[in-house]
Image (cartoon, rainbow, N blue to C red; front, side, top):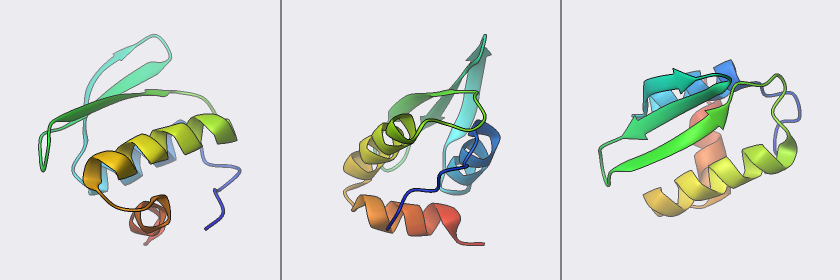
Length: 81
């Protein structure tokens, strides 16, 4: 599945909250998210609009690896209405 080119940080944060992540803090232009289940995991998202494709790919790859699913499956979870 192709990565969305115009995804910005607020959209990604909202999508990550739907799968169990929560905003822990914000320092400058970076937002820290944390998830406790199934395994504790924290990640930082730059609050940019739009996110660079490489940055988005790295974030999604990290989350997919922690959850034990493919990046495409994670994208489907995040982008479903």
